[in-house]
Image (cartoon, rainbow, N blue to C red; front, side):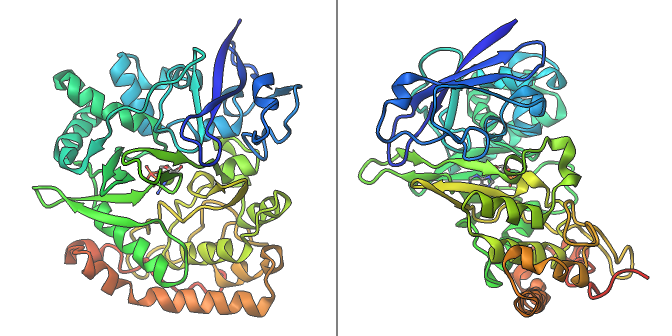
Length: 415
Ligand SMILES: Nc1ncnc2c1ncn2[C@@H]1O[C@H](COP(=O)(O)OP(=O)(O)O)[C@@H](O)[C@H]1O
Ligand SMILES: [Mg+2]
C-alpha cells in the first residue's frame, strides 16, 4: 500500500511555493519514492529540492533509504520533532508515539522550517494569521497544559495558536511569532525547567557572537510572571519588500541530512565529517564550523547533535546557517570535569579536549597554528560568561549552576 504526498518548493525570491514533485510513501514503512514533475523540470528557474538527497533535476524515480522511516532527510528536516508531534497528537487525540512522518506531511503548513511544504492534495494552504508577542502569555500557558496532558481545557483559539508549533523542530515548546515585522521562533519556558532557559540561551547567543560566531538576531521577551521567552529571528525567512507579513523562504538542511544519517545514528556523526561533506557539496564553512565546535567544548554544550547544525539556501547556493540551540550543560567545578560532545571532534572520538580538537584541523581547511589560535581565542573569550549572564538577568542561583561549565581544563585528555 502506498500514499501520495505532493511536495512543494519555494524558489528564491518567490512568494508562492510551486509543485516540485510527488512523494510516494510506502505505508508499510519501507523506503518511499520521489519523482520531480514535468512542470517543475520544464521551468528555467527550478532548483534541486535537496542538494544531497535529491540533487539532480531529472525525471527518474529517486528512492529514499531505510532511514528516517523511509522519507528523505530533507523532508524530515521540514517536519517537527518531539514538541510538534506532541501538539499534533493532542489536536488529533492520538498517542504521540503513534505520530508518523507521513501524518505530519498530509496537511500543508506555510510556517515549516525551510522551503518545502507537503500536502495530500495538489494545493497548499494560504499563510494564516501568525501569533504576535502579545499572545505570548496565553501561548505559554496553553503549551504548559499540553505538556501536562491537560489539553482538554484549551479552547479552539488556543489550539489554533499552538498548531503553529507543529511546524517547528526541536524538543522544547515553541511557536512562530510575528514581531516588529519579522518572523521569530519563540522558545517557551516550561514549569519543570531547572533554570531560566530563555535568559541563559540569550546570554549564550551573545557570548557566541562575541567570539566571532554568526548567530541569528535574538531577543528576550518577559512574561508577566518574570520568566523569559527566547526569540530567534527565522533565518529561513526574509520579509518581502513592501508587503508586510509576507516572507520569502530559504531552504534548510540539517547536518544529519548532509551526512545521510538517521537520528538514531547521531553518534556516528562528527565535526570533521560535516566539514568533509560540506566541502563536497560546495559549501565552504570549515573555519566557522571549527569555531562552533571549539565554542561547544568551551561552554560544555553537549547537546550539539546533528540536527542542531544546519545549512540554508541563499539564492541558488548553500551555506552554513547561523548557530542555534546553544545551551551549556550545567556543571559544578571539579565534578565530571571531562565530558564528551554529542558528535565526534577528532582522532579521540567525541572527547571535549583541546588535543582532540586540534587533531583533525586539516579537515576543516586549517593549519595547526590557525586551529590553535581559534581555540585560544574562543576559550579566552568565554571566560567572561558571567558578564553575559548578568546582562540578561540570569539569577545568582541559576548562574552558580553553570560555575563549572565554562572553559574547564580541557587542554589534556583524561589520564
Ligand atoms: N532562528 C532560526 N531560524 C530558523 N530555524 C531555526 C532557528 N532556530 C532554530 N531553528 C530550527 O528549529 C529547530 C528547533 O530549534 P532549537 O533551538 O534547536 O529548539 P530545541 O531546543 O527545542 O531543540 C532547529 O533544529 C532548527 O531546525
Ligand atoms: Mg535543537
